[in-house]
Every structure is written in structure tokens, then in C-alpha cells.
Length: 201
Image: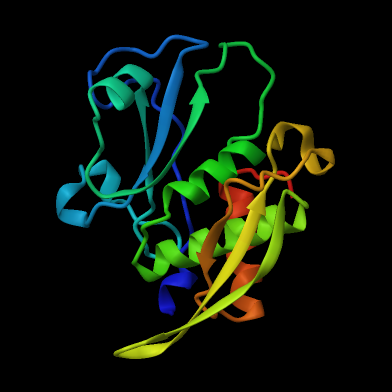
């Protein structure tokens, strides 16, 4: 799975709604979307590769109205989470907190690409290590035209904001496909995620 060598190099917010073009106000609820368009669909500036020669993923923000009421979804959507536009002089926060990590992971429920599957799996491992997910077992499924797949079964916290002291949400169990990546690959992707998304690990 060579895709795991990619760095998830995500740009900072632009402050403008990608759907309407209006400036996003401090305190406004927005959806932060990660998109991964091919080179031909990027601007000249966006075609600049990182230090490994790879095209970085792009972050775009969409107002809650455009996302929820008008069902706007950007092309080449990789994953998304909901957040608020910070105040101009607000103390710097994590780019992605625990609740957003979970929302980003869940938004990729229907992922099929190797890079998305690996991304989602590592996010689940991060939440598991933080004791914000409970591992309930592994469901092994035989495929008609492929290898056996392992689906990890998880139970999330009812209120992730309470940290690992909160109750378990027994009504919203979910599963994450194990892409069978190596320990070294997991460590590498986790390090990349912690640097780019500024995760509190």
C-alpha cells in the first residue's frame, strides 16, 4: 500500500465559503472538508508539490447553510468535520480536536480507496489509544473474489467532550476495516497526522 508513504499536507483555512464565496465570520459554524483533486483540476498554486514531490490534500471550508440546507459537497471529497471559525485574536487551538477526529473518521464510512481506508483506520487507533473508543471484537468476512477482510467493531463515547470518563454510546456502534498495514506504517501515518492536523496525542 504505497499510498501510506504520502504526507497528509493540509493547508490552513481560507476564511471563505467554497460554495457561496462569502467571507466566513468568527464564531460561524462551518464544515471543513479535505479534498484530493488530481493535478489537472488544481490551480497553478495548488499544483506545487511538497518536499517529497507529492501533491498535498487541500482543505476548504463550507458554511453550515450551504452544507446542510443546500447539500453542497465539493468534488474529490476525502473527509470532513464540523467546526467554528475562530475569533481573530483567539488563542491558538488544535486544528483538529477529539470530536472532530471522530467526525472525520465517521465521514469516511463508505471509503473504498486505500489511502482513505488507512487514514480512517489510524484515526480509529488514535481514538482507541485515548480511550474514546472501545474495541468490541473483529468480524472476519470472506470475499467472493478477494482476501478475508477484518472489520474492527467499536463503541464510541456518548459525549466525547467528557473524555474517557464519559459513558459508552451503546446505540451507535460502528466498524472500521483493517487495511493490514504494518506497525512502521501506522507509526509513520500517525506522526504525519499529528504534525499536519496538530493532533493532541
